[in-house]
Length: 532
Image 1: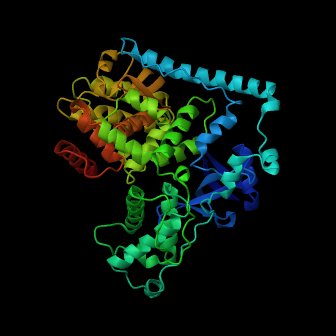
Image 2: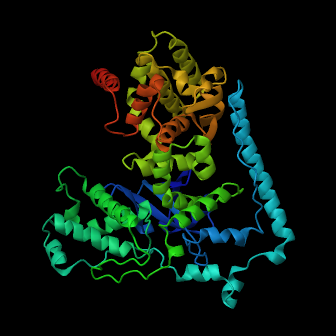
Image 3: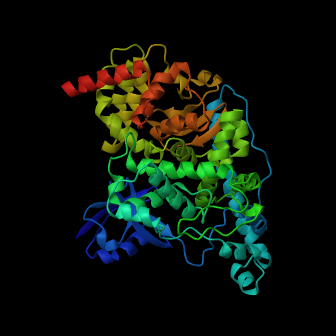
């Protein structure tokens, strides 16, 4: 009997099979997956998930599942996505109603929650209309196979002509002298390291001018697999994996600033990319505007394509970040320009783009693992503090009715809630507001608002400048999203909760962003818990 812990998106399940060859079909059946699937195992050497064959899965292993699109699925052309809007306009009805931003009111939490419900209601209505429209106008539907066979589909023809990112990345050929030196495991000097980066850039630029995060990781993985000694701690002041990844990213960033219409790069044994015209370049302003327009229309749809949204958000990250930092737009303006950013998933991914050292997509797990050992001390030490005793008593009453997993989460949440009591002048209500504390909503900085009991809230939202940012399923998710919101919107922590949020940020793995007060509390907690 073989046992595996398998994760697919937000679903987690333990599978037991007699014959490992039946695992794939059982997983597809349990998770209701129509596409083919691929197994991934976490590799500590590369600090990433890597593909493995089914016979390589370890007993009681922790496995991740990703789906493989069907072969007849069209490849994505990132430069022409905006043109697909007209193709689907007959099947989907977009609402042109602008986003309503309500001024702060006494019953603001209720209004924010109603706004979230209205969005869900609109999506359900839109979905019903889509189905109705599809059934009544089938004569106008766009048949991809028919158009392709008759030569009528310009969009598909462009997609087929585009050079797509390879399914399996192969390390390009390096200059002969450099390759001989690396084969002899001799550490390259600065000039030779630049040659390596240049060769990787020339090859990758043949596919895209804006590689995704996974593309950079794949290139570095291939480099270090062929030359493992490059992954040793031999570069002063740098982790090898991050060093090569950042060098390649910097190379792309610098080249994009002055990349001409025809990409003229000196090739190191690699055939250069074919010349493309202005409209096909991802780098230009017009392309970025088309991507933004596509996301604005996609945000109104009932069923959104999360994969494409993530790709578009990745491509527009640099101009978006520059606009936020230079122009300081309001949150309402930001929501009008990039509505897809305003979801729990995209806020966390944006944090990871800004600070790759923090695994924001697993922020809740990081908080749980890093803070759980110290939560008991933080709770017990607060029992005698003014106004904190009621929170501690409420926690002790609540855990009596919770499962073990829920009790662990409640303990970490309580510790975070009590942190402001350790810092002079800080207030819990400056970033966590219940429905009995709506006066605290008059301030504009981001905060978590919830309705009901702290340990069993009916609704949870994150809002900034009285604009709904996202809804969350748990309080810990919401607090993680709150920290990510400050990063994504380039905002500073307010004085009345700065140390509290910095401590939470430190628990997520942030470095060099702390104060003496936070360091003092951390040292005190570490000292007391070590004695225990």
